View 1 (cartoon, helix red, strand yellow):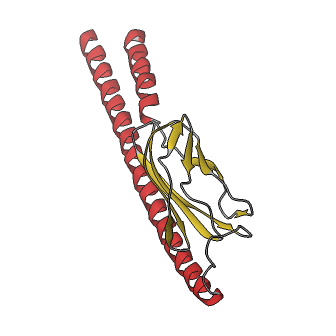
View 2: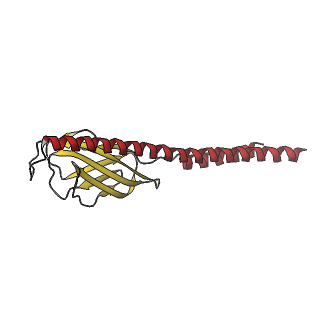
View 3: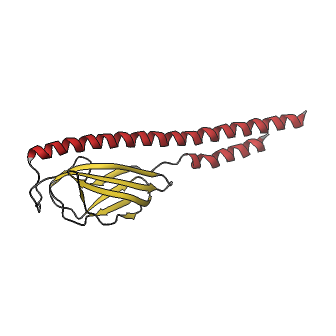
Length: 185
């Protein structure tokens, strides 16, 4: 009786780490969400809670216009997005999609502002900027909502694996007990 229970316990412990995997989550960025940048930067960094396997996409948008970047580089938990042109004043959105170590694609957007930078061209009129800011805010809220819904769906799929594993273990326990008591009769 002890041996089958030990086998079941070992099987449960073996399955547990496989079902409790988590996606990479952004833990920090430079600049951070909502920050105001007053000096031009050469690159932006994203730091995650676990290793990143690959970068699918990065995009930097300033007041609705794309800002040129070079290829993003991955170093463990850090992704660096180098800029290919000078920063200008405006409202920035740094969007990313990466493949986390567990193989899942995760992404989101970091929003921040740049003020007091030397710009090559005059920025839009205040009225035009206000309209763009409102549009950017609405788009960012929609993307955030979509990202949260996607994350909830992904969490649901992990829960399915856990439930399936527990059902299998319960069936194995029932089978072992059935055959153990059947041999005694």
